[in-house]
Amino acid sequence: MTDDHAEGRVERLTVGEGEAMREIAFCHRPPSRSELPSLVWLGGYRSDMAGTKALEMEKLAAETGAGSLRFDYSGHGQSGGAFREGTISRWLEETRAVLAHTGVSRIVLVGSSMGGWIALRLIQILRQSIVSVQGLVLIAPAPDFTCELIEPQLTQEARQTLEEKGYLEETSLYSPEPNIFTRALIEDGRENRVLRGMIETGCPVHILQGMADPDVPWRHALKLIEHLPADDVVLTLVRDGDHRLSRPEDIDRMREAIRSMIQNA
Image (cartoon, rainbow, N blue to C red; front, top):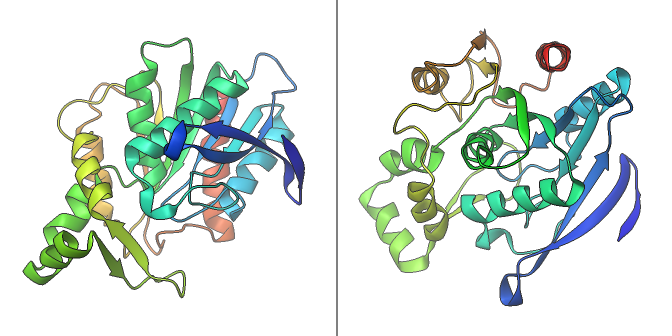
């Protein structure tokens, strides 16, 4: 199923069965040069595939001849499903389903915030598949953010609210609607932790991190690097950069990082 969309042709894929069935929206453009990989956008918590960085990634793919793949997790953007039912495992399942459906085999993963966590979990799973990850660009990556950044800050009152109501609400810096963190998300996060030992990506990694990021401290990126001892890792710290890293100069940095991955794939 497809429909028209301002940023490209949107297709839809059904994932899950029974009550877990949801429709995932995605945009896929195969590479125009067969030797080049496809760029895969993995968005952040409550973001969508129509954001500035995702569209700039797709634009760069078109300029270079690489392929591109953008999609919305369930409960995000144009995809179906309830946001409150979302977990890392659920969104990871959808990522795998979209990759399998489109048949991409050589990819560069571009993960923003929570998308960085999804990317690292995906790499662990893809070791046993025919899909080859050629490069990894992480923008303000937030691996294990439920365990590392949310749970340690919870007051006793917040923990009680989480237990009784099943979710917490937090004021968002980016939306009039509050962020919602469910008990299911936090419990599932513990099962998907990646910062517990060495992470072997088998590909070059470029991390872009703002030092003025109020959501993911720049030291979290340093901690991630400690778990990537076997990889070729480049860390770019942007002194005045915020969490989104969507200013023109930030977009330029992202594009150059991705372009380097394409050239070396």
